[in-house]
Amino acid sequence: MTELADTSAWFASRLASELRSQFDKHVESGAIATCDAVKLELLFTARNAGELTARRAELDLLPQCPIGPAEFRRALDVYEELAKQGGLHHRRVKHPDLLIAAAAESAGLPLVHYDRDFEAIAAITGQPTRWIAPPGSL
Image (cartoon, rainbow, N blue to C red; front, top):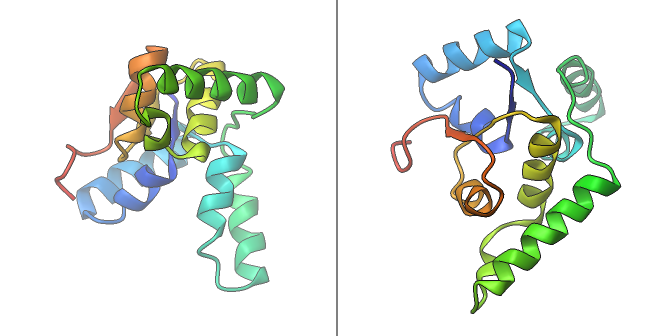
């Protein structure tokens, strides 16, 4: 089964050898998808233009979940639903996470992560999510 992997899952997978091996197998088999928001975050760690270009080319080989006008609208709708919960609930999730979740939802893919934001979003959207490791374990 293909899943969209958030940046948090990519980074968390590097913290434990067993997770890394399993995650890398999923990447190699095409079971990990990405989107432009995740690519931007992953490319941030590149040390130079050559490294960025090479990583970008590798990420472009993965299944893609587009982020277009419909996904931006969905992210805004979810943001509004969070605000309706009162207080400053809408401020508890990062804007890129709203877009990443909307991309996964639109593509009909589960979202693998290591970030509580996605559980708050999924409480509204009902979309499938999976922690790459138990929360707080890494």
